[in-house]
Length: 398
Image (cartoon, rainbow, N blue to C red; front, side, top):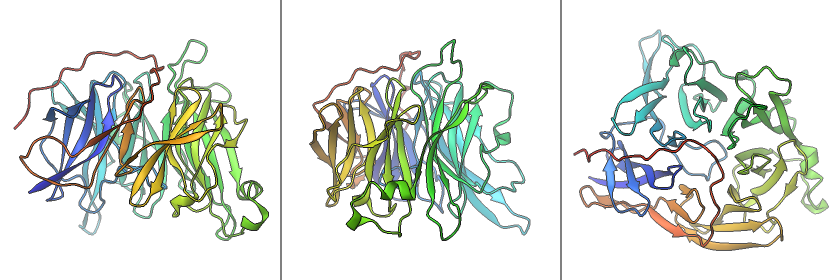
């Protein structure tokens, strides 16, 4: 049996990387490794996540990728696990629910499961993201035909994990949830969630893409509001006349807040299946100053990540690999800092390293990890103020 390590995710303190060890028998094992990829510690036994739906953590996707998620204090991980559904005719179908793993004790607890019997559409829960104050976890619910909705679970409420309703009706498509990284204040006591919401007007009409904001638990005016709306005709107006076409299907994705919570970067594309047409745009938190920051050079750019307040990193397809590109918003310059093997990657909290998955397999028992590091030559101090506690790794489990 062999393995390949995937879905790396850096802890907030930058000391550890959680990942999944994908075994050749289609099982996955949750592991953690130190930031220099020296000591791998398995956290759970290998298990099947979903036999009908591969775990896909690559950012080369028009919808929210699967991911692991650290709690703000790095004490817990939110993960996907198999959840079985039984229908009235006796048939069974595998879906996924979300669970919490306590790192120190190894204890597992349900985070978001489905009701029994289940009569809605969203059999697959994935992409958990923690609010910076640790009070909420947002995630995506997905149906077998690609329907997607945003769910928000208050962690300290008495609500059962099986009783979480979707935030919006099934006639919209919502994904890419991301919390504003700044902690709530006395004047603004609720965390802010941004997410993509697609609006289909009619089957033959061009769609509209929006980024919306939500403050769960807040009754203030504007707690749920639209940040920015992009219509097909507005996007076409930004193109040269010889590139305009009525055959356009806009898509927003890869939404990420600036560290100070005052702006967002995101992907906008007229063709979700052609990554050479993906572009990086920015907008402020009030929906103003919408602008494209990546060139229209036919290379394509996606997976933006803020590097401080005035730079944005991104990926660009380069053959079978991906260039890591940095855009300087103050000068308009951009440059390549390196090339990585896959879009299954994560930036370190200070942006000095990227950890990424490779396609290389190793025999089980060979030790080490197939993950690799790219040193970016960059540095941006972490600006998110949250409670940090040292994370002691558990003893290695055989």
